Image (tube, rainbow, N blue to C red):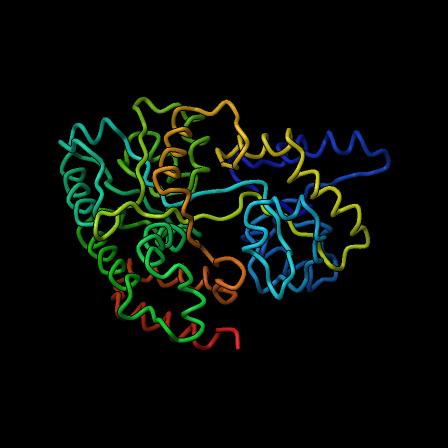
Length: 380
């Protein structure tokens, strides 16, 4: 298994996760492999080129690799897996997840908000900007951003609920040239983001800040807010910050309750080239249908799945309330899902463009570059 490694999704976690299955299946061995590239996707592409791919891959796969994956059976455990049907390509289910991960969240330091005189979380983007200025005046880094993969990811967490609240299949519409980045709420949010950079509301050296350092800056009390998915909760709680942490949904332009940008948590696919395909599919079945396995996967990142409960922390429960407030409405984030997917390489290209804002590029330049890139890379 090639798996995604994070501060909480450690190699040890995966080994413990599959241990009961291995114990119940004499003769089966499962080797957990961490990425050697920047991500599971990069590593998988390298392994495919070398002719030595894994049997199972877990992590954020993009649709360009779907043809390399085996079709999963037309079975109830597949149908029950979150997003399995939404992820279909050419009628094939190629990926199943253990739960639901939501990402359009703003975690905040309650003590910092009180010090800055902020009495309630903002609902509108303009209010958010005003509050960030107050937090800067109170001596905090207002909004913690960083480098690596995070600039583009955070931007989509902020922007997609403001884009897909009115056009849920925006990626599919962009493929048809029915919408463009130019003139959309993406361009509008880029203007807001660029103003934050100019006003010093985000770190000017953000491109050089690593993800783990972003977390430390927030939990140490240096930064007042941080936009991230619900998987941040366990890292916050492990750090035991000296202040209470709250969470609110990313603000919208009109102040309405946003949908949550989300995707399947810990998604699994089986390689078409696997010589142990039947065994690999059986292990994936266990991981997404066994109650104990699912509960362990949900709990480690604070994820959600209808019909499953676990001893959740107060902060995780607060995140769950935001999902309820959004009436469970979830829109695409990152590369999207199934037919509502961006072309391969979208996340990397957007990440590069968002980083360029810190180097002086304008929102107009970024949307122009993104529209040109999408047109050149869209599925025909």
